[in-house]
Image (cartoon, rainbow, N blue to C red; front, side, top):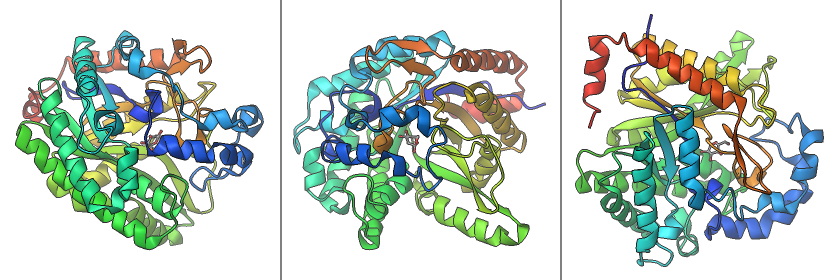
Length: 428
Ligand code: BGC
C-alpha cells in the first residue's frame, strides 16, 4: 500500500487580500465601485457558469448587502497571523501558504516600505516557529493602484516592476523562505478580468485577454530567473487552476478533452520549462452533455474529490514535482468538508501509487475569507470566523483533517528507501 512520502506537506492556504484587511489596491477600488451593483444583482451570480447557489434562501440576506462585497478589515489576519498559525499548528499542519500584498511592499512606484517587508519576513519566521514550512506567493490577483493605472498586466513596465518586486522579496525573505510561487492561477485571472469582465480591470476583450496572458507569462519567467539569481536553492513554481471535464454520453468525450485542453493547458505548457514545481488548484468537475448528480458546495460547484488523481496524472506529464496548493469548498454548515478532505487525500494517494511525484496538499482555506466578487458569504475556512467579532473557531472538519494527518504520519513511519530518495533533493 502506498503511503505519503515522509516529507509530504499537509498544509493550509490563504491569500493576502482575502484575509489581511486594510488593503488599498486595485481590488479595493473595484469593491468601492461595484459593491452596490453586486448586492443588487446577487441573485444572478452564476458561480463560474455553474448556476445560482443552491442555498440562496440561507445566504440571500448577506449576499444582498453591499458590505458583503467590501473587503474592509477582512479577517484582520495582518495583525492576527500568529493566532491563526497557532490554530493550524493545533491540528498538526506542517506547511502554510500565504501571499505577499505587493501594494503594501511598494505603495508607490519604486518606493519600498521596509516595515511591510519586515512584516512578511516575520510572518515566514513565525511559520517555522509554529512548525509550518512557508510557501510564499508573490501575486494573488491584486495590483498596487499605481500599477493598475499604468496599464496593469497589459503594461511592459508593470511586468518589469513585478520582477523587481520579486527580487526585493527574494532578498528580504531569503533566510526564511525556500518555496516560492510567482503567480496564482493566471488562467482564472485573465478570464475573469479580461474576458468575463467581473474582476478588475473589468474588460471583455479577447485582444486585451491575449495581451494580459502574454504579460503574465513574461512576469513568471522574469520573476523565476530573478529569484533563482538571488538564491539558486529557492524552489520556484507557479499555481494553476485545473478543471475535470466528464462527458456523457461517451460520444462527447472529444469535446470534453478539447475543453480540458483549453481550460487547463495554456499556462502549464508554456511555464513548466521554467519552474521547479507546479501547484495544482482544483475545485470542481464540469459535465459535458448530461450532468450527473454530485454533492454541491454552497457556491453550486460539483464536488468530485476523485478529480485530484486525474489532474495530478495529467500535470505529471510536465515532469515537475507537484503540490496541491489549493483544494477546498464553500461549506458554511461544514456538511461535506470532512468527507471532501478525506476523499481528496485518498485520491492523491492513488496518484502517488501511480508514481506521480506529489509532495504536498494545502487545504483552501485556513480561514473564512473574502471570496472576491462573491464577497464574504461563501465560507471556505477550516477555521470559522465571525465577521462581526473576528472570533475564530476550528470547525469539526479541521479536527478531522488533523486526525487524518496523524494517521498519514503514523503510516509514514514505515516509509521506504524509495521515498527518502525521492524527497532528498527537496530537503534543506
Ligand atoms: C483562488 C482563491 C479563491 C478560491 C475559491 C481560487 O481560484 O486562488 O483566491 O478563493 O479559488 O474560489
